[in-house]
Length: 156
Image (cartoon, rainbow, N blue to C red; front, top):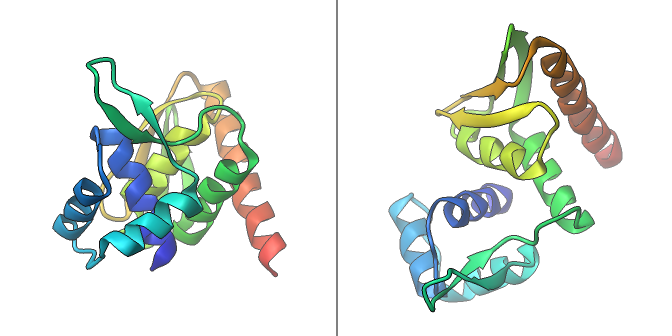
C-alpha cells in the first residue's frame, strides 16, 4: 500500500501544483487514500521531495531532477510492483499492470526518462507509451524489461 501511495504522490505532484501537506492530504483522500498529515509528512521525507518556485511567487512540491539514485530506485520499485507484461505495437509500447497501478507506473516511466519514450497514458491496468520510432521502441522495451528484471532479482 505504501508503494502505491508513493506512486500516487509522484503522480499528483506531476499533475498539480501542490503547495502544502494539507493539499496533498486532500488530493490523496479524494483518490481513496485515508491519510493524515503525519503520514504525508513521512512520505515526503521518504520520497525526498523538495519545494521549488512556481514562477508566480508560490512554491510547490517536486521530485529531485536528474539522475538521483534514490529516486530512480523508487521509480524502479513502483514499476516492479505494478508491472505484469509489455509488448511493442509499431510505435506504441503497451504495458499491462496490476489493476489500479497503471497511472502510477506511467508516472514512474515518465519520470525515469526512458530513451525513446515520448509520453505515457495510464488507465486502470494498461499503459500506452508513445515511442518516437520502431528502433527506439525495441530499445525502450528492452530497457524496461531490464529494469523490472534487475529490481526483481535484487529482491530475491
